[in-house]
Length: 333
Image (cartoon, rainbow, N blue to C red):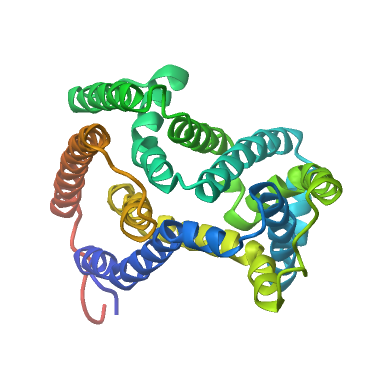
């Protein structure tokens, strides 16, 4: 017995519901963990930012090695290592993520968590801007409006700070460029392989960094009690787990859903900075953040509108194909 194409089509539509639920769980896990990451780094005191990032690189590499062994993925990684283009791209990605990590941990350790949240609030707008600047993409009207409002917000915050909000801008542009570069390898490099290659490139830098810290201020691993040592040794897992959850979520959810959920991380960082750590928020800073949030609202409205148009177009196409397709016989031939 064979089913009609129409029945098969309905089954295809219904099937991904469980996958979408899992996708939301993975996405909220990833962005939730990234949102409370400042509390983890602050718990590592008295370890300084340069030692934290060095251990983060080396322990992430070790954690990825375990995952590759468990997943029997070393052979697939070897194929990527032999591809010069992939290795060059991953070296550039590693350099950018190093800048991002070092800036983020330094900002957290020096009481600038609110400014890190600003960086990740404006990151999607920076990504849109880089798409125009580097890839020659065309923006819709609302996207231009969002970019313009965010530029005004940066000007307001620059006046309020007495200088540009460098931490926020470095975080936004380093992560935006990181995403742009990673697009060049696409789906060929999964989350574990990507983090493995990036941290492998950075491992010599991390080792030098640890030597410098050791001969200047001294390493803290093993000197601040067992709980501190355990927390520090978890840096690899803390780095890799949300990244893997993000990869799993992005495979199961449409881009528009990930676009909305991504703001969970900077919202949580903002709450941690203001409500938990008591960082100052003068009026001019509130105005700058308000402008950024308006720009985000405009960008999300445009994203939702475009996604709605795409859904309607796909439904119209599916309906047209259903009408044109001949019914297959149902029952015995």
